[in-house]
Image (cartoon, rainbow, N blue to C red):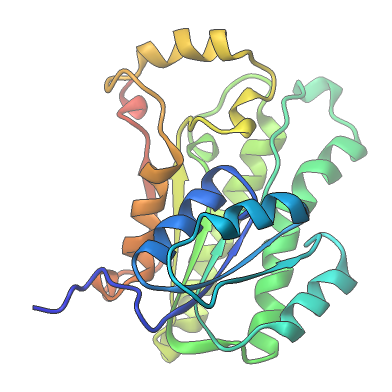
Length: 246
């Protein structure tokens, strides 16, 4: 029996691949046979991710996706893609009454505007193959609000809504579009506004008694990118360790 979860023969672009969930997804995709193209701003960290990938033929292109010229240069260098994972993003904790234009730009540009505009360029330049899969890494914060998290939550809610619209537009080409909404995952992003000790105590409240690890999200991304999810589009899957029950 052929493995429906195999990514052999697929070329996949992973943004935000220099660390955290993006790195975990890149490593998992390579392990399942994909040829992976990494992108993020930090060249040194991209090289570290590249060295962790199984197989041959992987590459990286350093780019700040909030910069239009760098975004265009990235797209021009890409081959035909069978999968895209939009994972680049930042965290922020600012109370609503203290939000400024600078705060909104800091979060919205990388978390919502950049992936939308990158996706538009990929489609405009015909870089997405028929029957490809596009995955957006959003957040459970979009539907599980917390104080000080308004801008971040709003940015992720925007990307979930965008992904659902994109899924309808690309369905005639059999291109699937889905999103993943994790709860807390142990990455540098989790440490925004909290200490390791505070998080270690808070994770005990989760029904599964732990926060997620990057590989937990990566395995779900592999499923979405593979033929195993061939009848799935327009979905947002929450992966939360049961925290939605709290």
